[in-house]
Length: 224
Ligand code: ZN
Image (cartoon, rainbow, N blue to C red; front, side, top):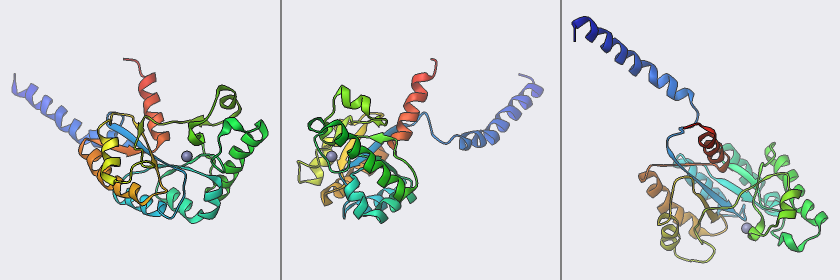
């Protein structure tokens, strides 16, 4: 290779190195990283602020599927969650078995919670998770929100030990998982303190469900 060609090549490499960071920072999400969403159901409770603050200190965000009646009693907690980049989602007003309710009661459970979230945070929730995962085709059609279940169950409602809860999550973990937890127990925060460092070590970015779905759709609609 002649000196001239070498200089051109060097110039090309140097410009690429200089320009590349500008490109990469202009992209909000890293589409090539492994991603996980952690979801917290049934709150907000007296433990929720500690969870929000722990996530924030570790550069993570979560999705809180709140109950309307608890959101009303813990409005500052919802604001703290929003201010720290978390997502608020709808988990009904009073945690009923939806399939046991009349159509009017179902709509009320959901709309009341939508209004409460909007009044507190200024934004409407776009995601819904049915209490007990109890839903059918007819109810799905009635609901104007994206229905989100989970792919990885911590079973933090069942197990008392933070270690067991953490291992339930970690031993099955895979890219794009939506982890189910409940911000209604102290042990959930203790388990989180094992889960978050481990997931980071494994190269996962911990983001909200809406971000995760956006990235997933980006990949699904990309042509390979
Ligand atoms: Zn629930």
